[in-house]
Image: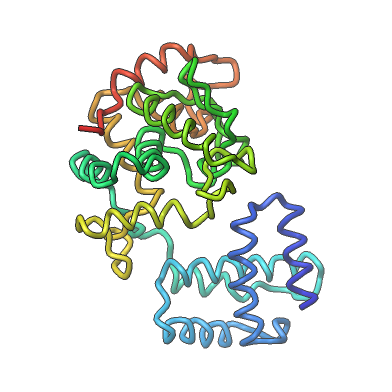
Length: 298
């Protein structure tokens, strides 16, 4: 549809991520299939559509995403002077209030992660390294998948994270456990005759599929009772859960908040002690990291 393509082009021009654009495309298409003439949709029609989504047993978080996409579509139509009001706004405020505490994700304990890694046979270098890497670095899945072979420096035990929108600090560190796993993985990677410079490759030498990471985690987590694919968010173990695990473990080990944020790649600009003129000594962060990161391979 022409309108959808215009909206997607607008999202790209505004710098939205590919993942956001794909999600908004799906939500907007579903809406336009239900209401082909969005200019004629008002408040009552939006209430009807909300009930339609609820009748399909969609999760509240999914409905909120759908309405965010539809609201963005109407903002675009207002900008192009094709409608005068956004009929989504009052519906979201009254029926989809996001001020309530969001559904919690599962944060595995250190015993859980150790059991998970121990359940992966040592010869499965890719799978074992994936889980350990996420647990020890708190990398986002997109950042993790975008790593190239040259982004890993085992001589200096450093990670050079890709330039992603949410990644504010691109340097990360490698502890001895992860060093050994990466060293073995890179040897085996070379034996697969890589056909790409991406770090994570399958047996055919090509970059792994974007869904492979969660598939590996959940394959080993399910028999241990750590993952329920059809359960609520707090019962599902995904790559993102390891950011919570990393943060929790660093806090328990006494790491300063600023160093945790630094290692997670979060923005530091909102803190008075982290303005544009402050430079962190990366060796202090490295030392703090190595003293706090837990041992996971028992």
